[in-house]
Picture 1: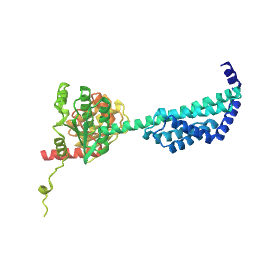
Picture 2: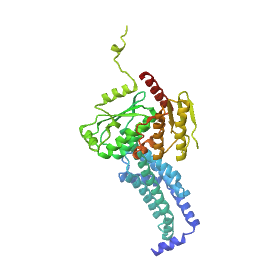
Picture 3: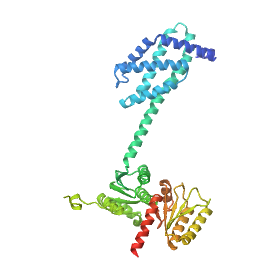
Picture 4: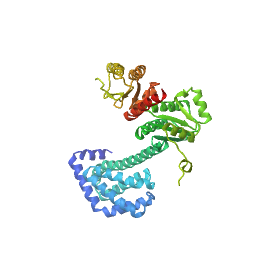
Amino acid sequence: MSQRNAAAAGTSSPESTFDLLRELVSHLREKRTELREEWAKRITESRLLTAMTREEVFAEATTVYDNYVAVLETGSVEALQAYARDLSERIIPRGVETQEVLGIVLLLRDVLARSLFKKYQLDFNLLNRVLDAYEPAANRIANTVAVGFVQERERIIRQQQEAIRELSTPVLRVRERLLILPIIGLIDPQRARQLTEQLLRGIRENRGKVAVMDITGVPAIDSAIANRLVQTVEAARLLGATVIVTGLSPEIAQTLVTIGVDLSKMNTVGDLQGGIELAERVLGYKVVPVDEGAPRH
Amino acid sequence: MAVPILKQNQFLIASIQAALSDKDLIQLRDDLAELVGRHRARGVIVDVTALDVLDSFATRTLRAIAYMTKLRGADTVIVGIQPDVAFSMVQLGLTLENVATALDLEEGLSFLQRRLEDGRHGS
């Protein structure tokens, strides 16, 4: 330990660290083929990246290796960051796990460290100094790649959550100025908020005049959500639109009565068909079968 | 900042351009009540599209405008309430009861026009 400290003290000046890294880089360049193969072999042995073919692993390994050496040389991780993001984007859909990515980077670190041990085994002091220069850089690289991967994963998850949320409360236009909003499944507070936003935004964007909210597929609601629905209906009125609520189950009707909703503020119709018919009447549409309405020839 | 009030046929249009102080709101209320009589207007549109907040005083004043103009012979419709504004108003219990609302100026005009025609047919 004391020897190591002494060595560290000896390499505290930036030039010598820089020189050591330069030496390191030229060593890694020289042994590129050999070390890369060793690394790819270790990856296969450790059963990492099994979702990819040997050739793919080798090709990626080559790029990672070159990026790795470039980071050691320049000290800048930006190119590696970009590559890690790009790589993550490609391999995440194929089911590559975080531990695998971290695993292969750590393997590379070990493979390179071993080769350094071998090269400097006769000069323990120098080996220490080389490792002092190498280790922080290597850890930083491992960090960068792992963080890049995790961030990419989180980005994808966020994106998917967003998509699911949007899909869970679609606002559809069935006719000019008539929107429908079918809701299926439980409404949690998050979804209720989404629903309000989507409906009000939908009214504004589609210039909706009447919106039919169908809750046939909603098994039950608690009083907080019921209040929220009533508020949404009132807010829609402030935008100049009428909301017709359809498909209230007996349980939901019971909840609404229990919390004492002012029914004069809410239009309710038994089922979706009735709701759409009422909406059409409000908008002045008249739907007639073709042969009854206008007989041809 | 005073709100410009435009006259179009039998309708008055007050288009609020920026946030108003309480004093400006009172001024708007009094101006509209006065002008409805002077121009023999049958409808009033208050456009609040530019407002990103409507507090209790503003809501109360809008309702007062609607009631006062009604008493003087004109229907009032509030147009252009933004979705976020609408929802926060409802959460604060400010629901503009018995006051007509419409999506935008165009909707408001056609609403007043229809009111006018219904009235004629009715009488």
